[in-house]
Length: 366
Image (cartoon, rainbow, N blue to C red; front, side, top):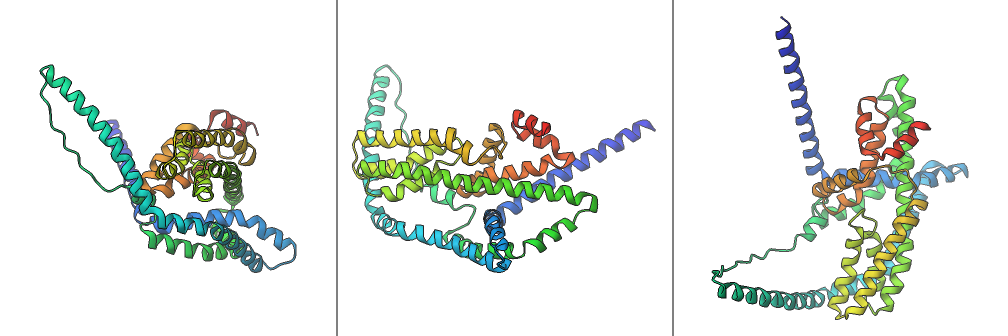
């Protein structure tokens, strides 16, 4: 009898584990195949969190919530449109000049390839003289996967355009109906858990708001430092490369390499010598160092308490799942998940594993 009970218990545990694996696979499949919808919703929720404080201020000024929501969305669209207006000419010129830039880069890389080929041939000759047989090599060329990686989560340029068009409407409706959505969400839970759920949601919204606004300020300050230096070394598209490099610099760990790549390639295509390339590299590294060690702790704060291993795994997973947009959303999405784990009793061990040990201790003390 005891043996049969043990067998039943083991069978039940194996079935529960199988169901969890199947559920995880279903969730990953939904995240992948419905990525355009999910990314649009996540971006809209993050933007709504950021704009909500402005809507509250307008409400305190006796403006109806729908009018305050509309004004904040229009303000957001105005800032984006104004930025696009100042960068439009440079962006169009860059697009027109892309074939010429690509031809120059191809010629430059062909020169490097020829040099490497000569080195390989010299090495093969030396080995053949030493009695080694020369093995012919076959090189396969394929199309660069960078564009597919950047658009993987959005599917295509058309899907990205549709996402951008729907986002303002979603943000407006989320801001206008915030009280109804908030109440409906709390009603899903039992009465004794509603206050706890409300605290979790408020903490998560505060974390997202501080993270997004802080990183936008860090990117703006970084661009103000990088752009004049790029222009001083004679880069033709400095006004465009400065903001691009500053935004790429925000990506954890690999941000400095990503930020260095576009301006370096543009400078190489323009025939820059070694000195401008060194200046660009040093500028990106110095600005990134200042941003990570001084600007980010001051402007973003320590709300995102994720350890280095968690951030690395999150970037690998979300980057694999959604491409370039996954790298951008990896940290805030994972931090929001940790905020939920920290406040759900069965999931607390996972939240503790994801967080920094010192930060976790500080939270416990508070």
